[in-house]
Amino acid sequence: MNFRISKVLPALFFLFSLCFTQTNPLFNIKGEAAFAKDNPIPNTEIMLLDTLGKMIQKTKSSKKFLKKYGGGKFKFENVPSGEYIITVDFQTENKIKKRISLGDTNLNVGTIYNILPFPKYKIANYPVPDPIYLRRIPTDPVPGDTINIRHILVQLDGTANTVIVDSIIQDTVYFIHANSLENDTLELDQVYLIYNHFGKMIHHSRSLRNRMSDLQQRDGYILFHNGDSLEYNNIYFAPGAEVATFHEIDSTMVAKYHSLYDIYKIRSGPSYLGHSVRKGFETGLITIGTIMGIQMIQSKSFVDIWKLYRPDFSPIREETGKYFYPTITSLSLFAIGRIAYDLYKDRRTNYILPAHENDPFPKNMFVFSLPEWIWKKSQPIVRPIMNSKPVKWWKNRKLRKLQKQAAK
Image 1 (cartoon, rainbow, N blue to C red):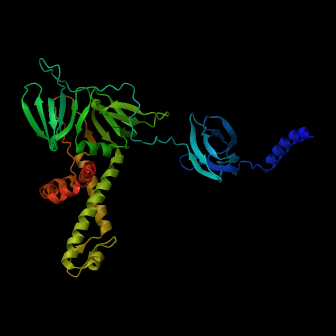
Image 2: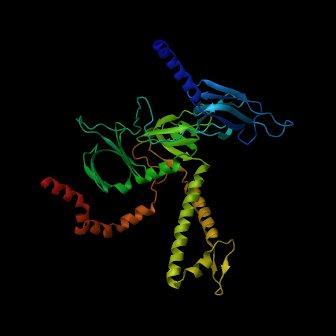
């Protein structure tokens, strides 16, 4: 009898657990397939895949009503939570893949368009196999020199020299001319780029960094030192001396990599005007804010000054006969003026590296920075304060604490 009970009890427990075990909840996924101009695509194949590419479900988008209205909608039912990939056949050579994450609720993925997005940018080293840094400026070897590393020092006007850099301090670079072996110095304000003959970048100026930032993620074309040119739809400057370009014509969306030292100039496309509008807007805000501040101090009233500059599209005339243009009108004029100035100065063209030594750029590559100018002008006041005893005492408080702990 005990033998039979020992056989029956496990079976009863198993049946009991099956009756009370909850199944995984299932959810629905819906969306719409359409061309870029919101034109739905009817009766097209849509698949739901797992992350390994295995098909989970397959359906077709809805047909148009009277061959004109609606269409393009799709739905997957009874899908467990997890990560999935939706593929849409846009009746072209390429299929669009959209990765989704299904949680504990029904999911509406919205409209899936036939647009291949650019990959997201991440600050990381690109996996370039065996990158080769080409030195486009020739360097003459120093007789008997087998130890020193020679450097290329490029100034803001494009002139370059082969030197041996000794040291770089706060605002000056000390170096030796490779040919004459004479000692020389140069202020860092006049330096555009310094790199050695192995292609290692030693110093790049704020002006070069600002130009890279302005070019980042814009369209345009590159002119290389060998005379080749390359149009691109997006550009990214990676850490170091790598430049990645993306091209819409390439359906694989794989970036093309270039050495910064191979590039003579980069000219951005019409999208650069967005930078001009932003700069004009910032300049307008600073100028109008300064004028309003001065007038408020003189009149000792904020309300009266605000009435003169409040948003409006027509000038306000005072009894004195003076005209005060409102903020909106003034900001628009500043933006238009900055666009015209950048076009006149050809700010869209940026030179990277000269072709030969003593072969200057057609224009100077200096970029004015108001914060940097204010910082430099304030140094005669800031430095004595930073070197004062109270400030040094405050900076060394952690060191004194550690010294007391070590003494114990």
